[in-house]
Amino acid sequence: MKTTIIFLILGYCYQIFACDEVQVTSSSHRRGNVAQNAYDNDESTRWETSGSGEYLDFEFCEFKKLNSIRLLFPRGNKIGYYYSIAISLDGKSFSQVLAKTKSQRTRSYIEHSLAGIEAKFLKIITYGTDQSRRSDTNRISEVEFSFRPTDTTSPPSGTDTTAPQVSNGSPSGALSSGTQQVEISVSTDENAQCRYSSNLGNSYESMQNFSQTGETVHQSSVSSLQDGQSYEYAVLCKDSSGNISDEYLIRFSIDQQQSTSLPPDLYRNFEGTFIPMDARTSSELSQNNGCFGDDYDDYFYRDTCVSNIDNELTDSASEKSNVVARSGSNSVRFFLRPSDPNNWPSGEPTHRVELRPKDSAANYLPALGTENWYGFSTYFPSDFKFVPNIDKLPELHRFIIVQFQHGGPGSPTLSLQVIGDNLVLRQKMGYADTDGVTSTDYIVDKINRGSWSDIVLRVVWQNNGTGLFQLWQNGSLKVQKFSTDTSYKDSQAGSRIKFGMYYWRWKEKSIVQESFNMGITEREIFFDEMRIYQGSNGYDRVVPRD
Image (cartoon, rainbow, N blue to C red; front, side, top):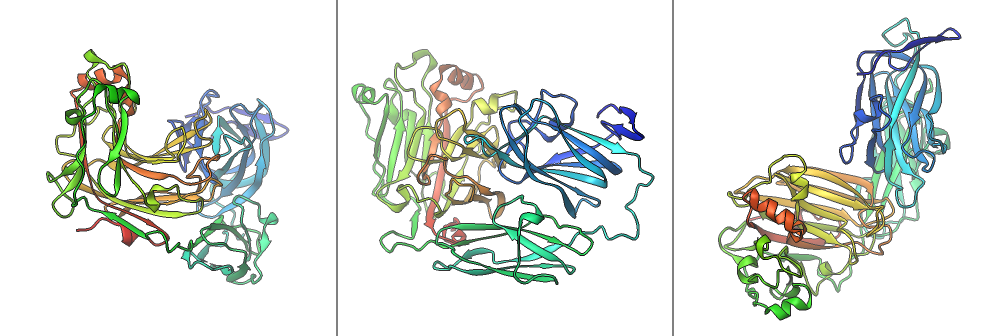
């Protein structure tokens, strides 16, 4: 809640805050920097998120005549932020009042006149920065409004203030490889003039007209399409009263032509023969700080990191198991017991057991623009102990069960992690292995112990803002992100999958001791029904099944 401050200048009544409450929400936030931080009278806090098209929403307690808006950006004297502003009377139809612009370099507030326009809702849409290594970061420290006196709490009568509603965008989904030209189209609920652009967030005036428009069906041809690419077109429509619609998106992709030399569908249910891990001598383990690789079977390669003073045959395992199975009689079991803090090794402590495909298309880094589908089932035993949700304990004791490695130094671009009792999809963006890498967490769901969880993950690998990922759990879509990076800016390809347990926090003696203090002395999980497919429409190909 903000304090009401009223003052008069030249007959106008100005307020930093006109009502006792303003509802502030956002499309997303990152690292605890929530929407309310942008409207709390505290310039040291901020709202923060990543991606193009993310926004802050303000709902006033009554209809207001907006005289101006003032924005304060973190490090505004060094960083230029891109944004636009739209207003609405009903919270559904928004009209743009400020086209996409870049903030001027200043430590002070940036003010935009709104000329007394009436609204009950205001949206600030953000599009990142002009920084090469923080191009997808959005931050706002503080927002302030000034209002003109108003005599009504309802919209003016007798005037059309309703913007056109846009629907039926076409095409959508994946189109056949070899498609080079398509007809894009939308419908409106009233006669309107519609325009489109391949760039999001543009003003109506800067867009290109549909070749057929003016009534309720709007069409135009786009060409020079290429296999393996995703496309996105923003549409704005304006009626005869000048009302402009919300930005409407048409999204589609063109299938990648599949090479006949690569298997299109990869599957393992872990029923076959596997190669047990051989014990290493202390001298062998010391040669690579305790980390080594060997064959799990004819398809998977095993990556293991154990202490050179531990017995890796009892303190770690990646092995075929008949304890539980999603289908058939067997699954693959991963087990880790951390190094003893009272007998800490000089090299790497025990912290990794993972598998990855070998000698196959899935083990190679997919080309940028490639669409991959991954399906698998996970099982956490009923006695699996969660880290208590106290202070920073869940974050300090998180570990990875699936990761996508880009073939160089730095964190995985995408990973499934156990954080407390949650299964979380973590996304990394920026330039690999630099301070400029940003991290965003998407909570999938609470972990249900003692039962199998079926996961399907779709990824379009790209580093130019046209990538995407979607995750389904037990048939329900849990997470999706479009128009994003799934590869690092300096990567030349996508990433390859590894699964099992990577508990890198157990490389720290103090964290292991803290685990012991919580009664966590080992970790055990199971995987089954691993499928990988490269191409479009892959859900049914990879979804786990009996």
